[in-house]
Amino acid sequence: MSKKTDKNHRHLELISAYLRELRFGENKTQMEVGEESGLHRNTLLRVENSKNFTILTLFQIADYYGMQPSEIISIID
Image: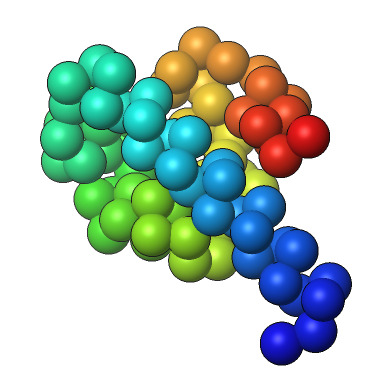
């Protein structure tokens, strides 16, 4: 992988870990968050495992946690 790709993957890993910790902080399962947010559990699994996900998914997760998407993305700074 190129340095740019490595950096982008690291950013994705940071965001994924942050979102996982938010869920853990609420003591919820992926299934519970999925049901409450309208996302499929497999989508949350992909997000939390640093797989590609859409910006729309990020918007929906941010909305679920009562955050702005920029708050989630700011974790990479």
